[in-house]
Length: 316
Image (tube, rainbow, N blue to C red):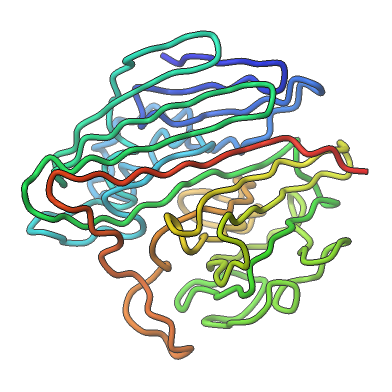
């Protein structure tokens, strides 16, 4: 079951039964769906069939936008429990507290961390606002990795699209950086990747180009970072913004039909900037960056609140 929120700008589809995911954001001016659609969305095999947590998470993954906690990335043992691939929150069934034409509130409780989650989604004439609250129900401090996981795709993006960002650096993954650059490379995004058509932008590979990249954007200049996925073909872009204090880095995931094996089999096209509180990977890489870690500490009885906004930007 999904619920639909709408305003004059966007139509937003939310899936309470799987992580309160934002499955799709449709631009109402053009009718174009902007978020990626995963080929695993329609898998009919039960999630437990694969046995490992990555297979369980990927089974039924719709694309779109997830909130990941208490883990992001490969499964790990933390606070005495195995936290699965990309955490528990995006697989949880969320309870709808309130649902109107343009807003919804949802909640969930986790088992692998002492957390109660609350998500408020508002759609108005200025765009989309998502407020996520993580409450620590324990008297003891608890830490968690947290990652917003929005991925944009076709038909919104194509071979003419680009990404604009004020990130001072791109750090590629130390183990699986993809095809566009080497491992553990650090530098300005527009010097590591092909420069885009405007200042501080990079060109995005189009569908079928068989290109991939995994890394993170870091060293954001603004206390409120913003990235713009721009589509000159359609005349508009989607701007994603957040607070640097909450999410100091943003994972960058480019998958342009590159993956030959499981799970994509060259069927996936997704361009994602994912605000988060840890760098992907583990340990200290050769570039001197500390990857992974425990994330954000939430005091006993306390809470962590983050706000992410999406707005439509007309391109001149």
